[in-house]
Amino acid sequence: MSADIAPHLPWLPLLREALPTLTVFTEKEDLLPYGFDGTAVLQSYPAAVVFPTSTEEVSALLRFASAHGLPVVARGSGTGLSGGSVPISGGVCLVLCLVKMNRVLEVDRKNLTLLAEAGTVTQRIAEEADKLGLFYPPDPGSMKISTIGGNVAENSGGLRGLKYGVTKDYVMGLQVVLADGSVLFTGNKCVKDVAGYTLRDLFIGSEGTLGIVTQVLLSLLPKPASRKTLLAVYGTMEAAAETVSAIIEAKIIPCTLEFLDQVTIGCVEDFAKVGLPRDAAAVLLIETDGHPAAVEEEAATMADLARRNGALRVEVAQSEAEAAALMTARRSAFSALARVAPTTILEDATVPRSELAKMITFIRGVAERHQLKVGTFGHMGDGNLHPTFLTDERNAEEMHRVEAAMKEIFDKAIELGGTITGEHGVGLAKKDFLRGALGDLNLDVMRRVKRSLDPQGLLNPGKIFDLEEKQP
Image (tube, helix red, strand yellow):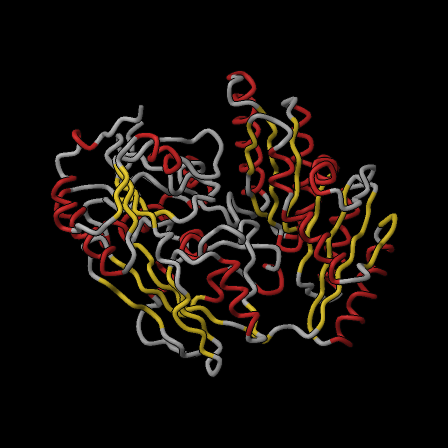
């Protein structure tokens, strides 16, 4: 029988009185799904979960939270990979889940913009644009379930990031509820606007620590007229990395330039059965889009560059269905790897493209040295790698080796001029590595911004960094 923890929450009757129509979960079995995200191991429980349906309700909730000193964690679909929406603060957190705020409010064909509520699923935004011959490029691997508010909070990337950029490159405006409940709209439909600070960019990637995004104004593009997809097969990962460098050096920016290593290829083929070569050390999935003549020329040039840099063979998708199958295989990499071991830890490190071969070789060496099974895939075109640890959190000794290996990988990424996260965010999982990546002054400035906008420290507390410096 489930237990209702409401009797232990003296503020709850006041909340229900202030917002009588609000859906509130307080029973433990209902709270369970809201105690974790897509990050392995990290888990906690909120005191309650609420489901606002409007910006006005979010504002009222934050005014209430501010008055009662109640920490608030905003949440969408919970697909995050850094613990960003895991509630902490000793179990007294209120999770504010925005999935009921899921309307596309406007598609403006004259200005090529789309206005959506924060709980709108990313794929729906892409589909609404597509109906009008328009294109929303950001495509995180979780786009079938992730929400646009979460994409903004994490500044999500995706497979098309090399050519088209990431979420921040398409955000023209944001409606944000601040910690005191005040409602701010920053940005507009103007292509050019340099009036004052660009506050919009401050909230993008802030992981819900500065305000809660309730509406997003997005820029759209005309839909590309043509697309071609290639699969290049390699005997070594280094040859695949050299091909990427050669393509960029040839001044070609493909829409997609993804890779899978041998471990990932085997897992994906077991899962998706799309005909990937299990004996390959690596494959590149390459996609070019644009004007039909340019697409044909770029595809032919990239196929030639792949062969000249060691590709064993290059295949060109002969139909849209075949191309879609290849891209689906790449999008399913995490799911495929997750079937192999009880615990799957998907990491995220980025290096300059010129350092890719060195970083990939280093990851392989780390796995061998620590006797771990690691599948690596990612966005090779923009240097964003996803070493994925296949492990078991119940094995304390093995988890210690995983933690040591992760630290070595992040340290190496920084040494090579890279960063500890290219798209997953810091959250809880990477906060201990942030100082090494940014330095003391950057952290100090971030704390100043946080204190200015959230003086009580109630918005997603403990994420990215601790508001007060911990003494050794």
